[in-house]
Image (cartoon, rainbow, N blue to C red; front, side, top):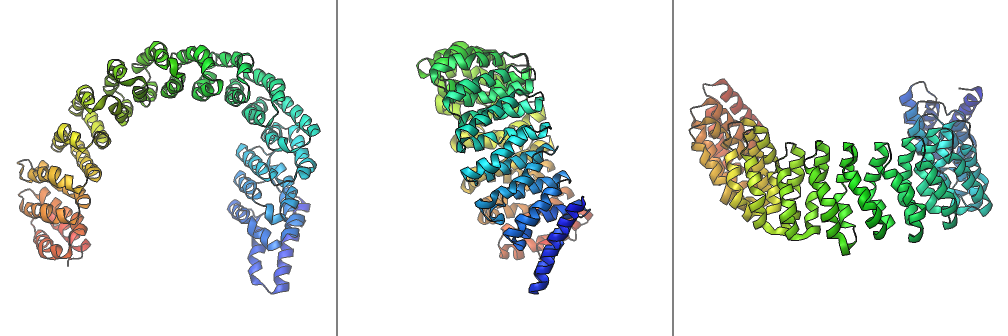
Length: 607
């Protein structure tokens, strides 16, 4: 670093050292060390020191912070990006450390330098801090100090400073004089037509925000022309940001001006040659719909939305599919049903069998919500066949999204109709020959149970859950065990005692040793959820009896189960019932049984 910077650092360090010496205060020496570390060769040391900058400033006092620390920081802003990022963040909270709002302008020089560096995240953080401290400037200071900074950045030689300027216009515009406002508008216009695409992108991203602080006349005369130009930019990355600004601009204009000032550009964007621009239109469609109102929605946005749902690019179709429910909800009530049935539903039917799984998944996450909009009859006739098709989709995420939202349909058509229409498809999937499909349905079962209720679950799905416990695939048995635990957590211990526990314990006598082991796995999973009484009185006797099983694998799993359920049992049961059995297993002829029994004795402290 420069000799000037070195002298500045030496001055700051010496100041603290003198203060420490004069006052006999050893606590200030660590501050001197922190200051010295600001230019240490080790990046981590510099970063640590920057993060403690407020401590240094407090030790120096407001005057020395202004006259020595800030100039030092400004002169030496050439560092690793992570250090500069930390510095940019720290300075945004420095107002009181430089003497309050009266002196807040002292923070502008280092932040101005940070707003011009090459690394984007550093510039963004510097702009964020500048926006923050702009609110602490008085109107006079804003014109004397802050607004000149914005002008310097806006007319800088490097694109980095000009991009940073774009984020600062809106925070100072409302609080300056009309003369200065005119200059700010001119600078913004210049940046919107900058030669560098990155600057035009930055301007486009702030167009809506800037429009919100402008007077309506200037919105019409300035912003609309800039919006039209940016929406026709040669770079699609600029055009798509203009779409985002369209939402803000549309909310500011009277309804009668929207058709002439905004809609031609919006129609153009919805049919843009770049899929990224069309994607942005689809992504912002609900917001655009609210901004332009029901009449324009009916005449212009319905056809545009249809086209987006049929777009040749999957990303655009997925974004539009994700907005189907919101779009339909926001349609004018007087002809909502007619528009959906005539224009939207045919597109939705095509998307159900789309070739792209992301499109189908996006649609599945919202399609169930259409039932509350269309009512019982339309849901039964038109939507249920679509739900059934999606329930059988090869993509697990599509099936999950349908099952996750069954409660929407349940509210509209009732549990009886739901069980007649959709549950057979779910049961069919639950018994699918492919074990991965069965596994997927098991994972959804707690969700289904919560939506359908305990009575319906017991009637229709309980048998299915118990059947999974004896599946020939271990992964299914393991998932079924976990499923039981989640069901008990949802329905309670009393339900478990009456419905689940007797069936699980009955498997302890199964001829297949794998099923007997599943009993132990279930007990391990259920003990905590069922509580001490059920575990001690009903489950423990079965586990103890299984310690005499002829299969060693069962016996060592008995030891593991006793270790698992031990903390749930009372101390009396541990000493009088569990300890003797574990001691017996610890002398077993099988090495594994002995090992796990001894481990259980040790963990439960029964020795």
